Image (cartoon, rainbow, N blue to C red; front, side, top):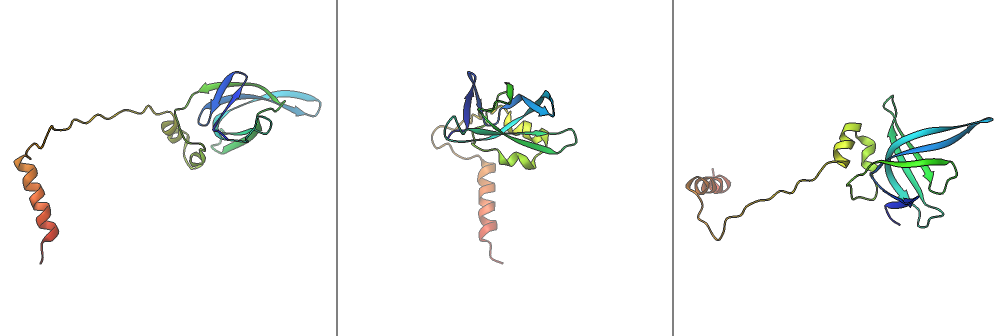
Length: 143
């Protein structure tokens, strides 16, 4: 099992935002409905039984999840809207977040923090020696 799948020469993975045109049959008529959301999970060990779950927030603020089989004949078109840099296999935690919080978690650019170290055993400054000594006194002070 993996957290990504291949559909018509495009690789999709968990966390990506996708737009799916899904065919619906209502009586005699057939129409397409666009479902745009985030891929929450991918399940199934082979191509025949692979399914993925897509979650979107509706206009009223309610979360809607749709489980779609990968080889469904009702998928008219599927396109990648936004790629995610997220590494986890399942995104169940987004169910309790707002739309903006989800955006910041999934699509943030990670910055590398570079810290400079002092070479060798450099002596401590007077202020840091004083603070270190005071903290020790506070910890072991008997009243």
